[in-house]
Image (cartoon, rainbow, N blue to C red; front, side, top):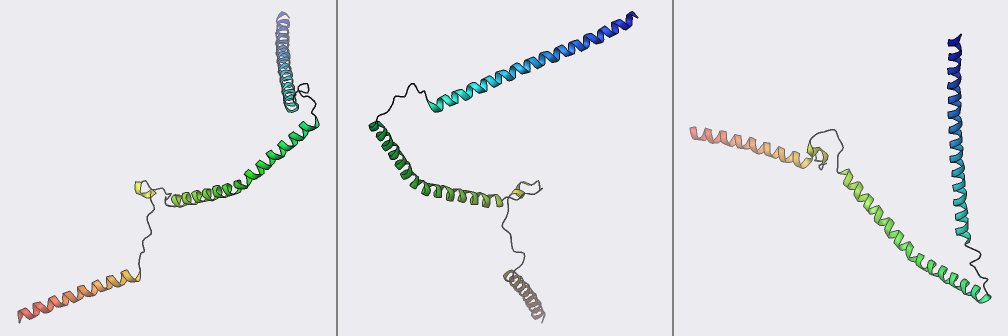
Length: 163
């Protein structure tokens, strides 16, 4: 009977330890989440203050100052629009230069052959050679004919010497 009570006490203490650990973890995570929410709220408030500016710093403007600011804004806008007209030409030149670079890099990359050969020269593409053409064929034919004529002349010269 004593062993039974000890076993149940041990199991009970294990479950209370587990629940205590779970409670601590939940408390810590809730604290962390509260801190994160608070930090996010403070960041949002800072952003709002930056956008708005401090209303105490601003003084009411008279009509002349309002007019001057409008003129300054119009001049600034005009300068920006004037500077953009040159931007079209620059962007066109930049795009064409980029296209030229890409096409040249494509040409360079096409010179390399990707294969499974281990030799060092396999990476270099050679110009394709014609396997046969009329000119080459006619030259070979002419050489054979000349060799045949040379043999016949040699035979004739030997025959003439014997006589």
